[in-house]
Length: 141
Picture 1 (cartoon, rainbow, N blue to C red):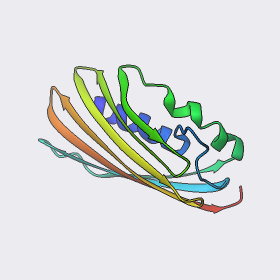
Picture 2: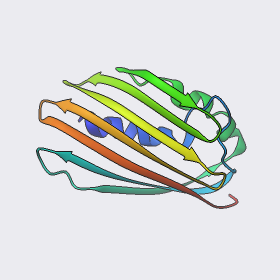
Picture 3: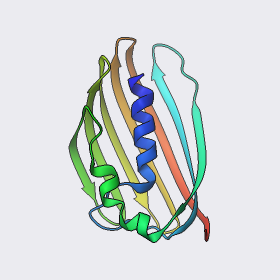
């Protein structure tokens, strides 16, 4: 399904989002939690995912290339980045549907937060997916 594929691609990219400057994040063991809700003509249960990963300084420094690459069928419409935040809009086409994706992340050294909204048109109808993301540094790796 286009909706879940977009969500998965975007959520995997967020911890290492592209920045013109290095994100204002401290290396270490981080815990990331995302909660997704879907509005549409048929019920889709809310989904929460939590995972931990070790963010090294090298990974944070190399984040520039991790999100800049557009997914197949997607095109960036806008992108604004700094060490404190990232926001973007992109349009995606594929699998019989289209989507407009808008997202923003904010970086606060030892925590991060963000939101993503995906408005999609599919053969099953129009849907809106909202994802809230939070990350918190737990300590050293």
